[in-house]
Image (tube, rainbow, N blue to C red):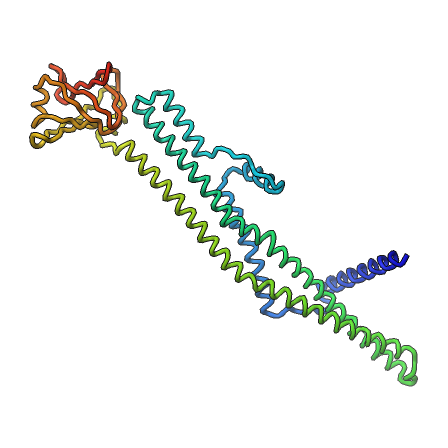
Length: 376
């Protein structure tokens, strides 16, 4: 029974406090009650904390979009995170593209120039996909997690204490209002009963003033204590900025590593594919059906090499000697080449083929032979 009475009294007291705060808040909005202003330093700290929260949320969300552009995948990751479960690993876009390229190159034939190039590009895309996965993991751990911890941890604590400070401020202003009204009523009662100073009304209002003054002292003390607690929490925002700065440096370093890896992968791929000369590009982009022959340059010196577009040929002192010679020569291919028609021979970089001249053939061309395959 005593416990029930205590609970009822506490419930009634809480309801009275809530009602008092609601009345005070409403009167402040209507301009019918005074409001205790926070000191300028505390107001600045509150503004700084709110600004930090807003921009941290925006940066965090946009970083998530940058690292994972697929909104469905982000939602899935969010659900798994809330369930405290690890999201299933999925293939990313570069890895998927790389796999398609490898499959296509395998079907076209690794022995063809295009098929071989597709396989090389696919392998590079897969390496980029792996680097992309590492960037996401590193950024999530070193950048996104600290930002999220601030939003879901530190700032929630600040918001809770800030709300409590607002309630203590309302209690303080309500106590001030009650004391002001009690003093006004006491003065009025004193004027009406000046002929009877011992009147009961004067005693009642004097007790009310005393009670209100005591309540004001208590609410003032609670407000000051809560303001100090809130101030100490808010001053930690500077430390939060310093921590986020270190996290930002980690994020930049992760990006730098990622882009450096991608650059190196593409540089290696470019070297594998070779830097195609202009006459090779024009051969690939020609609109007519007439093949564009490779130009052969004369070799300088008896041990020099003459090049025919994508070939390096160990040859006599000049090309004419090679044309007139009936002997076959070995040539190393410098660049990949796709045959324009059935009379030409497709070439792969770094392979060695046999070349020879044929009587009556265009002077700008040689015949090439690789196993059972022959062509210009």
